[in-house]
Image (cartoon, rainbow, N blue to C red; front, side, top):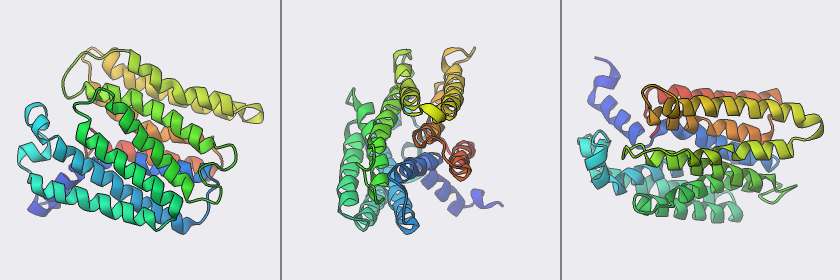
Length: 294
């Protein structure tokens, strides 16, 4: 009998599904981008940032399922709580534990990081509590990712406002992209008709990349835009131009594309930076083969 077939293996898989662990590489990509845009310094802080952000994300995902238990009972009975794979009380406990641990870790990284971590924690909780009843909840999700970039920049010497404040602009562009992805994702569980208008938000990273990458950086910026655009169009094809539309596949692919948005934000840089983001992108795709992204 393999480990995945044992009770421990099944429980571990349940925890990974609850945490939507396949999206973790995109979280790591967000704060890495913020860290690089802030100037990048002190690898020890980056390691603590990785741990804190990971815990906050997992906590948010666990509480997401806790708040959505009744909705999932009707619309997504395969989720861990309605399927009986885990008790709701255990999910609440896991969720709060991850959130508190993540916030405490970020508090160790300085006052600015602690305040941004608090705002991130608050945004996560508000999103989890009202996203099913609030029409503009994708903006709340975008706020979480926006703050994650700033948290990454806050631990660097340059900080959030260092240099040209590119970390802030990049965070805003990422937020726009997340708004588009989130509005598409809202239709997945209800089976509602999907409109084209959220796709306009997906173009936000291209606008910033073309504005920022001027002069000798133009070719590199254009290449990044082309790769990103090809990925977005390939992702949307599964919903808008396929014989059998598959919105879940589109959303999953666009979520992996968050890493490409971050790569565009840092402008590629050295070969080692390219490799880091490429590895995170591939890791997100590999994880999605085993753990659902939504």
